Image (cartoon, rainbow, N blue to C red; front, side, top):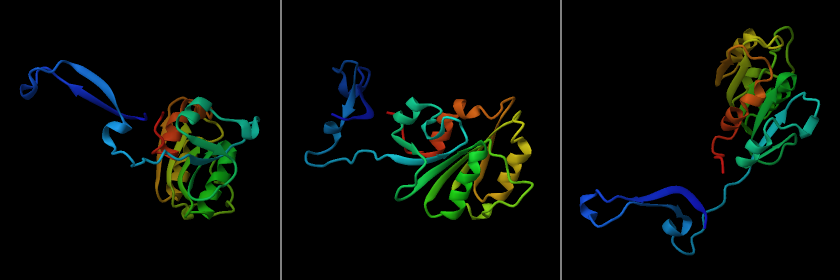
Length: 189
């Protein structure tokens, strides 16, 4: 049976059930769902990951965390809505996806992405409608705090989180945080 994450408890100190003993067991689907009624399984969340890591498409900052959340991490765009995650210079591609496909990109994470401060990007950041999380390391020489402020001021719906004393390697330490924003309903299994 499928565990539902619920626990049934019985306590001996409850007045209306004085004969009960302390017991605890995990509820399953058959405990709460009538026979013949099927609960659909959780579907995979597509996350397009744009980065400049030397491992290329095979790079995943934490494969076990990604797998536990039933997230399909890739570089191809499938059907329907998806999240885009951008890291370092590759993050401009994620931002461009979100700007040019606002009806399909529902979540965006930009991690240590240098802002196009000295040049005009080939997209308008104000076209990004996705709920956006901006993750930056305070000691990142390629994307210092002024870059976080630039992104925040050019996006409609963005939140900045700065990591004191960190550089661009925060993607590893903050991968769980990244995935929880990109796929908020992808609970760990």
